[in-house]
Structure formats: C-alpha cells, structure tokens
Length: 111
Image (tube, rainbow, N blue to C red; front, side, top):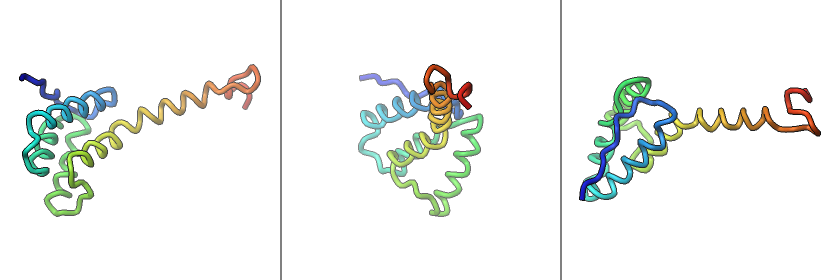
C-alpha cells in the first residue's frame, strides 16, 4: 500500500493541520514499530525552512541536552500545533469578538 509522505513544513499557519494529519497517518502505517526517538526524528526531518527551521533547531538542542518536555510523537504534534496553529485560533476569536452584536450594533459600534 502506498501512502503519501507529508510535504515539507515551514511553519505556515494554514499548513499545520495538514502536515500533522499526513505525518500522523504515515507514522501509524509505515513507521509504527520504530522507537519514539526515530519517529520523532522522522517528523522533524520534514520541518524545513521558514520560522519552523529555527524552532526545530531549538527543539533539537533541547532534546540533545535532555531538557525537552517532548518525549513522544503525540507530544511533538501537540507542540507543533501549539506553536504554529495557536495564531489561527487567536485570529478566529478576535474575529468572533469583533462581530458580537449588542442589540443591533456590532461590538465596535457599541464601544
């Protein structure tokens, strides 16, 4: 069975979920028997360029010094989601706040 590998991830907000989903799927089918360190290294090898490159370098430094809280691929995915996907959530919440209506007026008009 052929399964797609993830595209390189550079930290773009709109690509976070797609990267994590494809990487998770690939790991669960192709790299299931490997140790966690190997699985994490495989995921990190697809993080290249952009702001994600510096983030990855810092994480690798923490891992080499055993100062990282990340010990599993699931924790790694959550850290990626928190680091690169959080902005999307904040933007959505800001938009929701701006469109809250007070009577017939938006929040901005009410204020």
